[in-house]
Image 1 (tube, helix red, strand yellow):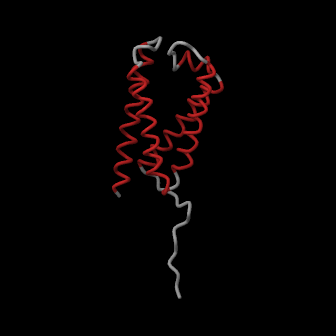
Image 2: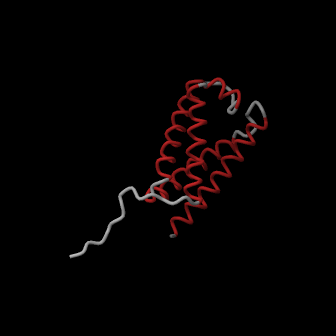
Image 3: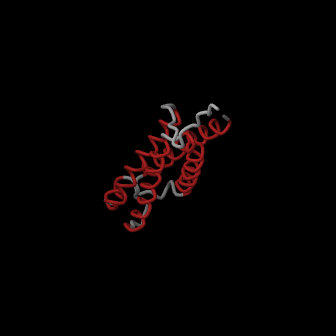
Length: 137
């Protein structure tokens, strides 16, 4: 009796828009998270100058970003992880974007507030759009 081949439990996704977005999210989250965790003062000055400066909090946020980046990279090549990851990361970008919208004028440098908000909005739109497309397949 012939058996029907089953897909491998870690079936790899092809290189397409979803994979590319998850790789970009993974790398950027890992880089910014490592920066915040390893050098919170420099991270505050360069990217996140929202007073008051709190190194412990920045390191906490950095640890979350490292974890988010790592799971995005891990899941980028696993077809069965793509839809859930897109949805979960889109939620994080949405909530992060809401936070930046509320506090857009609190950054010490105006460009920091607006560029952070823009990055979150663009990320959310891309992730949510891909989530909806992939879920419909």
